[in-house]
Image 1: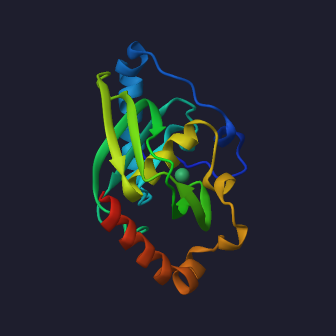
Image 2: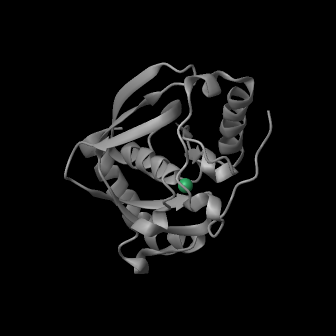
Length: 191
Ligand code: NI
């Protein structure tokens, strides 16, 4: 296993639509060991998720895991989930405001509207079909990761640019209010 280098905003790879994988390609040792690297890179960077495009592989794989995340302490825990060729369907017209950050957008956070209830479909790393629903803040995390595979970054979805903040200024000026909101979202939708 190896920790991969993470592409940052401005690199064209982050703006490319990642391509689908075939089951044969997924089963190959190269892809399987790539998935291990992706998980290890996410852990190393304390990410809540990471998409293959972020480590310079424009293929439709992303991973999500939230385990007492130090970058996002208000996020409910969520088990390691590896998704291949994922499709996210929004199941509600409702939106909540997430204060997002991204490993590919160093030192910036901003408010992004996300659906609090989605259906996720795709394959597991073994190539089996998977289909499940996600609610609350975690639904936002899935939307963020699948956006990466479509060449989108959270900054594209920031409607109010005055919400943009460095991590230090998020802590100083925005954290308390947002943590209150996050608690309300978790209470309302669960995780
Ligand atoms: Ni990201």
